[in-house]
Length: 242
Image 1 (cartoon, rainbow, N blue to C red):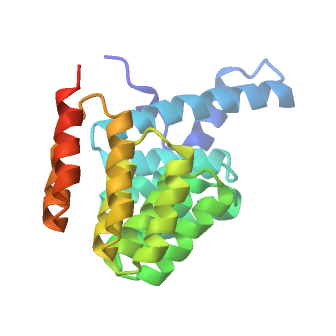
Image 2: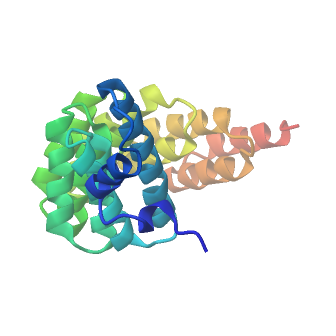
């Protein structure tokens, strides 16, 4: 049975040396070598992604390290190495890989979020996590995920006003996200800003394909507030649904 490309050589240097041995009569120009290297990188990335999907994270780590041997400046390879190491619970090594990715590419949004998630969920350093999420939004000003991560963490540590601002930014770039509106709604309820919460229910109703359940949630809040006239008008709105 033929070996897979990842089984034939110990590392990428061995592969390139084998090319020279197998083809001694050829003089490979620098442009040709670059094309060969790029094809090898593409194949290795494909192999690495296959290992990730199959949850073979140690093998994936090895592959991404081989890519970095070939191209030490490839930030994506360092990031993917970090993801594999994180799955192996090698958290400090994963953090270092993410850090290296941001050094190679200071605009690497996902690597900042990777660092933030480690600081948040593994190391419990909430302030450092916030800094990393902020860096993600600086690297990618329309980073929906970055603002969402900030909002979630700020809510957990009871900085609700800041959480609300973060969700507002996220909604600006994803105005049809029901999930984001519900995250905003939870913050408003924690703040007891009930009029704003009711308005947010109305926004969710507008973008929801199945708004009936949302109407009933709004009714529950209106009952809690003793606003029974609005309860009746909301029932009228339900009856007018197609």
